[in-house]
Amino acid sequence: MLRLRSLGSGSTGNATLVEAGNKRLLIDCGLGPRVLRQRLAVAGLELAQIDGLFITHEHSDHVGCAHHIACEYRIPVWMSEGTWRASGALDYQGLLRLTGHDQTIDWGDLELRAFAVPHDAREPLQLHCTDGAHALGVLTDLGHVPPSVRERLSDCHTLLLECNHDRQLLAESAYPAFLKHRVGGELGHLANEQAAELASQLRGGPLRQVIAAHLSLKNNRPDLARAALIAGLGDAVAIEVADARSGTPWISVG
Image 1 (cartoon, one colour):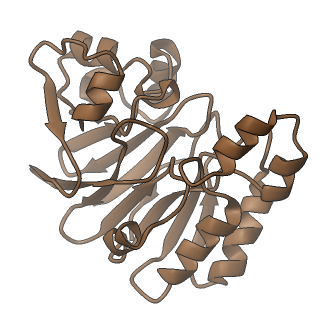
Image 2: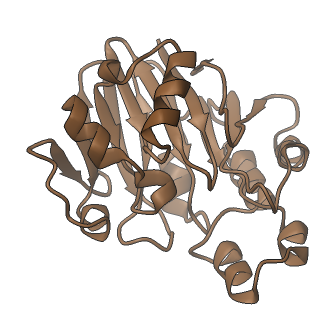
């Protein structure tokens, strides 16, 4: 069975557990070690039970304590070469596994395929995960959705999808103009309406569940993200909203 659990999603730190068979992957490690241990404990796990890390890009709310955790617990870590260099080209003591766009990682019960996204980072990647029966797409931190990304997610049963901001709240926020432009730009973050448009385009496939993620604490609200997704999906697809600080419960894919 393929399942996931968000441990936290947003600018305060991102980490998502994906489990299939005897493999447990932590996508991003943007929480501090103490908080990460606490949230894993709530999920019934310890860091020693994590089999691999996948880092999407070098921003601190995603790479966080990855180096510390990987080296302390001897956990292999995948990331792009651009992410590795942008995050300091640290020595991972033989645990670093470089990957890139459209590369497949065959990992026992779990197959991973990274894909590039448009974001203001050196070489950002997001992830398609499958256990052979069901597929999960993880898609956050991108400013728009090119056709290549939509195609990569077309077979997904469950999608963890960025709903970062409400455009009106962002426009009316106290953010300086340059930051509003960065967040809402082509290399920034998805607005609720953009996420809903992508979800609606995938509705005709196997998609059964969407988890809204990476919501801005200042420029979005769970009810706004949910309403946008409902407008795009109707009632045929289940919708969950990941909490910025507590994430989600365990969710079965498919």
